[in-house]
Length: 306
Image 1 (cartoon, rainbow, N blue to C red):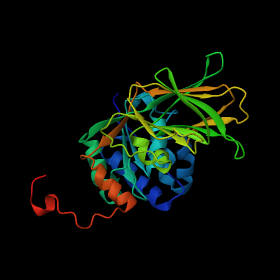
Image 2 (image 1 turned 30 degrees about the vertical axis):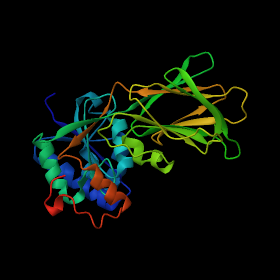
Image 3 (image 1 turned 45 degrees about the vertical axis):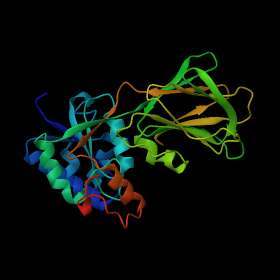
Image 4 (image 1 turned 180 degrees about the vertical axis):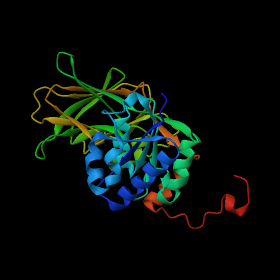
């Protein structure tokens, strides 16, 4: 690969993001790298700024396998989209936060120029995040849908009026059956997303585990579970039950689940690669994101040892 192909992912609907993408494209070109736009973004960005009219487009002039890295201008949702765009390649994703404090984007917009310079210098580390492999099987055991997730895979009721009836299985053994609004199977990365809203545990990124959280379950034993990262989690839609379900992965990919469908979630053999410019301080992100009170802390600032 002679060219250094850097994917730039930005939302064309925000003027500040378009402006930031303009700067990133110019800096990459000035350094001899080739900026690349996702096909879905190219037309909209070109309407917003003519500079983008001659930028290479992923899938047209540059193939996924030739990407070196993706620079993402946006929040966690945009980073999830970028992870989907580079899925199957070795390209890591570097998030530059353009909005609210997120958990995947570690660089603020004020540090954008430095981030691009360090990308050009290859001065970054790559952190691998556990991802999920998700399969849907029919009653005969045939795989009818297959996808993946970085944050979570959720099985939800398809209609507001009816709950779904499920059996939860861990490592090939049934654990419990109950009616519920759904089930969330989350990675540590996704533990601060849907899992958090559902009452699941916050899991530090360095911990390898999978969380399983029932949604409004009609059962005595319906607590959040934390299982091995190598566990197999299966959710079976009971045959004969009246409620149909739907599978959502990262809130981006969905598949309808008829009664009798079986959703099997395992650790993916292909983690998501995040580019890091400095060591992530997850505790600080929690404090900032949720505006947690830390007044009175004396810790290291007092000069004492832990």
